[in-house]
Image 1 (cartoon, rainbow, N blue to C red):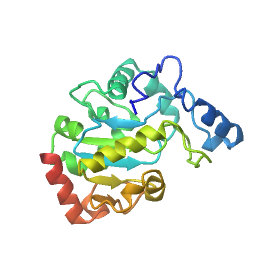
Image 2 (tube, rainbow, N blue to C red):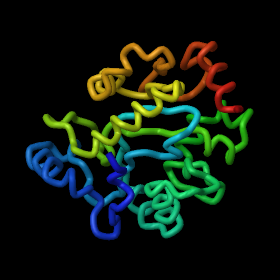
Image 3 (tube, rainbow, N blue to C red):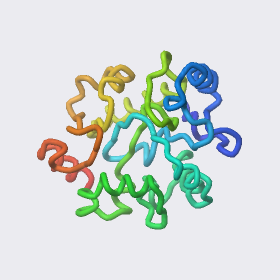
Image 4 (cartoon, rainbow, N blue to C red):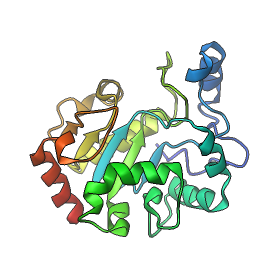
Length: 219
């Protein structure tokens, strides 16, 4: 399956045409806090899709500051580079030194243990995060049907498994295994202990796993 996100015209729509019908049906029945935002840019993945380590998250949140961030020209440029997977100095663009937004602050706080031993640029090239659901919402509720673009998300995860890449469940391990059954017995997958505060600290994972990630990221 070709990457369906490469050709998304975010100047026209923030919902992928493949997902539009399913999102409209879900939003028409969901309470406001669960509805998927149709104006903020979707986040199917952040970073190089051939990175050294893969993080699995649930879906991007929603705050008033996000609207200002997503209207910023520099942010949209970095975002588009990521979506199309063109070569860049900071593939995990939230680590770009000139980007100052809620997302960059959030990620730096979660990754600070890695950033103490690996420089921003190198780390940015070696990590990737997939969202189970690419669209923003205040709170998450599982739609009754999978979105068509999740088939591509599934393929990405499988490609990381085939390369024997470490995979970290940040949130919703059960949902991810339902989407990609191969994850259940994958020996290089592990879970952060506190999904409500998914920091990549030694205390939030077994120290052995933390050291394994550090060694992988230094390669």
